[in-house]
Image (cartoon, rainbow, N blue to C red; front, side):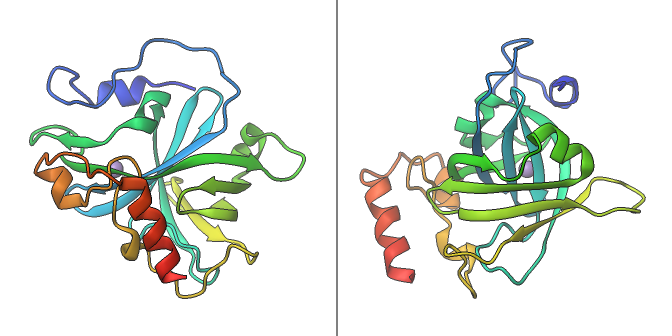
Length: 206
Ligand code: MN
């Protein structure tokens, strides 16, 4: 997995985004994260750790626990593992300029017999998320026969974690700092009881 494209698109002197430490061996890790990114257009960046990097997709409407909609997910360049902790502002003039919220984080389990690498190569990757907001079984499936080839669909499976009618915008706060997108954009400090607030909100909407 190469981070060349990630590096080529960025100037690390002018963006706070992490610079890859260098070539790294696979750690065998299974983290995931989602960032809410208020760039030219608001979108969510969904990232799964595979073989030492974060495989990444931009999802215009965001992920959902509702098992009915299929969410378009455009595969983008691999990101370094360090990106999984990133929250902040990418200054104007840089690639992806705008505020970045760490919207969810956790780990995933691969479902089925095939490795994540094999499942990605066949364009049908099934996994179970253990996040602070997203949980349960999902699949991300490549749309075959498309010209660009980077178009995938993120699907929530029907399971105990499925929530029909679930609205991603009801959860628009950081799992890291409790901040809203506007508070991040204004560089306001972290809220004190970020995680407590998050749990209360989750309970209230169930
Ligand atoms: Mn993005």
